[in-house]
Image (cartoon, rainbow, N blue to C red):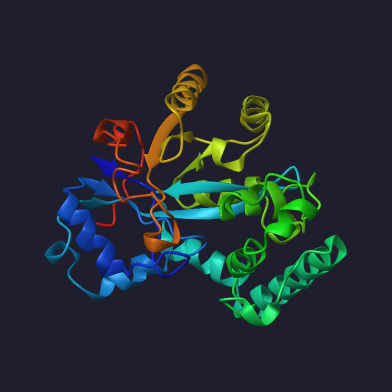
Length: 297
């Protein structure tokens, strides 16, 4: 059993690298990939201790890159690349100064949207006030969702979860909450080229997680326009029907397949390491055709 999608405290997970490795070992995972958002810092940390003393399986270098495609945010999972070279690019693009500047713009846009819509909101009650942090929206969502009247004022399918708020609201051009993250992200083609240039392979992450109304058309379009190597077909929230569609699509298009839990610790409910909601159990066989050699260990 393997898990090629998980996060640590270097992005928006709640487990440290060592805690994650300990859990992977206890579950008997054969191969893992730590795929923090837009950083490879986990792999630098692992240079500082004997990983095999904690986790005896194989580790595939990985990262989840946030990209823009057709004015929408799309994630790409990169595997097997030279993480030192890739991280140099990421540190430049996501320097503290630039992230702070971009986040401040998005933060003010969101406050403007909230005011325009007349939503009940008390800034002083927001859990996380570190608005230079790229993940500031979660705290704002938690404040907004407290008030039932907000659901009446904005009758969109954005209230059931933070994922809906983010995917169907903040990053959806058709939503009244749209604040256009995409203009501050590299294009998907740029990131795929970066991964390929540094010896890796690039996968479209969790296609159904974007909550598009036309996912199948989106898949055709992105396949035609972007040189992806594969698709994440196994994912915690996918139905059997969705997984089968993606597996069939990958087979028809001669694409590789990947899969993972998208484990974030306590920051994502029911995304349990290795097993998702209990029935993920991804076979190691899916990586047999990965033409890469850069396992971390």
